[in-house]
Length: 406
Image (cartoon, rainbow, N blue to C red):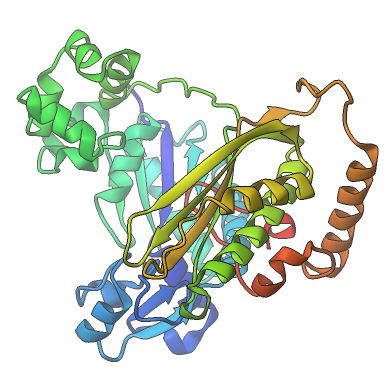
């Protein structure tokens, strides 16, 4: 089975972007944070910080205790998205990018003539050199080469930073037996516990299972797919329809009260509505969630007629907010809104009265104003207190649209 997939994984991506863009940060321990507050966590750490025991999700106060001179920088998501698009274009000039997997990962198909280990290594080094020249020397990558995406991802994680690892089908399980089960994509905490219950403690144990045994353990075809992927077979991806649109925001200390939390939720809802319209979908369910600093998480949801109207959604979250407990002792830490039951335009069952053309025109006018003059140009008043919050943020498996989500 020949090698065919090359996965490019950027190392400490957010922190590397900051060090590339700001030379004064190079060689120093850097932590990227959502805000400057000791109660929050790092969303990224440079390799200089990681060597000193500070990693992603380390509490800021703990990070300062471990590294008194750590440099904390507030995340600049627009920069990371811009660097991402430039990086994808640069890699694609050397090897065709098959798919962007996340903000810091992409998989390429090995071109004809590059499917030997020696030639694939040459191509990988060409990619590294081209990125250093076109994007910057601090944008290091680890590259994994394998017969399929699953093993290429595993290979890219085996040597960081600036790694290059080849895994051929016959290398498994010998070259990966030192890894834990959680190193395998698709084996999380719950799956690891399930495997352990079946007497599977190591990768060798897992590899010895038959396809039928893994089918039983997974409870379906997921086990068959995993069996094949572990042996280098490129298994066709399952295409999922757009399931939901969500936005969340960690509240700074000054906004950790009931009224400000609602204002931020309002802001997030208006962003989500604009994104919903751009995606040409409607929503039939709205959920809101509040994580607390000193109390259990609270959440609720409501169903509604299919809509993409901002005012409908704002009214819905305002109504849901009336259920929020009146507890002075509970301090809101993070809020989130999720639009679910998404349906593409034209596939909805609207009410007997159909869509309101006035609302449609109002939404279009507001979207146009916000795209031309910025997100403060037109908005509903409930978000006024939160205009400086709920801005662009990146989930690693979703690259935001700067135009819509800023």
